[in-house]
Length: 66
Image 1 (tube, rainbow, N blue to C red):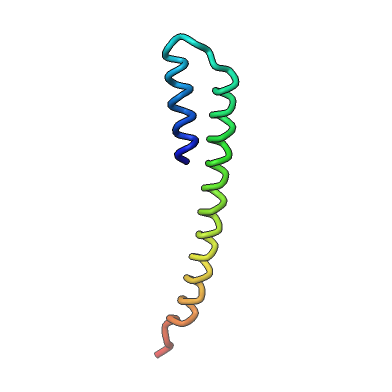
Image 2 (cartoon, rainbow, N blue to C red):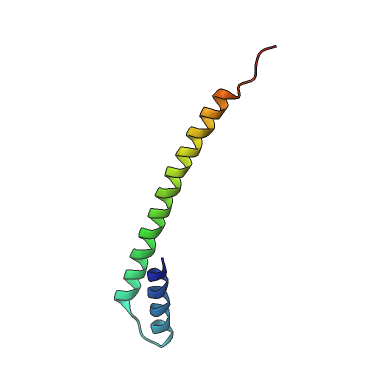
């Protein structure tokens, strides 16, 4: 993530200086997209584990009939 941030800042500085760094802009877009996909995948996996834990707990904590 810090490499992506550095690339984005460097590209922004070049753009602010009047350049139009097409290659760097494309690299920033690609890298940011890959990071978003990785984060979404990881959170999805964590979410599935949470659902599994919750289902297991709900089976243990079912109310008793009176």
